[in-house]
Length: 355
View 1 (cartoon, helix red, strand yellow):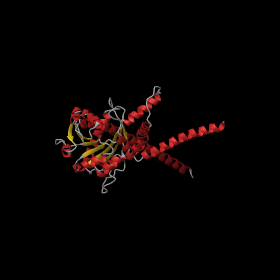
View 2 (cartoon, helix red, strand yellow; view 1 turned 135 degrees about the vertical axis):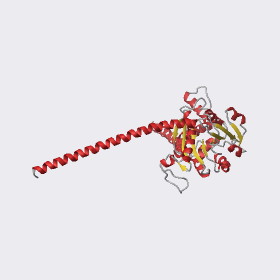
View 3 (cartoon, helix red, strand yellow; view 1 turned 90 degrees about the vertical axis):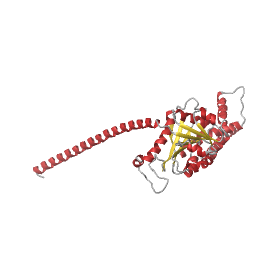
View 4 (cartoon, one colour; view 1 turned 180 degrees about the vertical axis):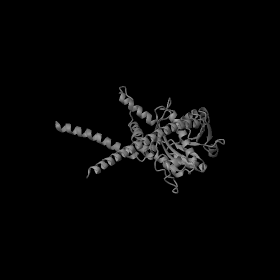
């Protein structure tokens, strides 16, 4: 290559390098501009959400509570505290108890009057009955729910069971939220702060699991709807607003909000809540009684017995029957007990033969 050719090659190389550097700088400038605009959008979104929360707070929900025992009264009191209007229904007459917490009462024998709610209708229906009576109660109300735009909420200690029942039975017009407040009138007597509230958004305006990437419609004619398309759909957005407004009650009370699938919930509670009840019932059946020389550990055992047996056997049976993981928990506990007893026998046998 001649000297002239070398010079031209060097010039072209330098020019190419300069062009690459310029393009890189342009790309960085463009990315920085995008990030700046993105940050502004995040700030704007935060401001809009705050304004929206304030606006929603000024629009009370009409909340129906079916099942007005201790727990139904317990949560209704909080709903009223946050400015919502509550109407209760139950098998027994709880007129006085409803009035005491600021709610109205309608007999369960008059579901038409209950759902009409003095012409106000019901925005959110909380079904606060036992695990064993949940399906029967829901079936009783199905005909009154047709074409009603409502959010249906369960508060059971098992989750896959009510989720399946509600998806199978409820009309498309009803949204579905599965929840488990993991506390009650005793543990939450003074405050709900720090107490766990588990929930799964099951269906909003026909969209199953609306927060997942697979936003499938329950009818097969429309599927894979984009998140942005759903968000700006007025009907869907109103459903989300109602759901969020209801969840905000628990959040504002200071609950530890845990969003969890119903199947995950049941897997966890089988080895926490159910096993606690199981051990408490077993120890009660053993007939343990107080002695003059009880240790602190034994006092804790007696506390466990009294706490678990204070709940009805129906609750215990419901935890067993309607959580598919409960039987595995029983079998694992039985095996663990056999293993521990086996260790004792092995130790005893070894000592005998070592003499």
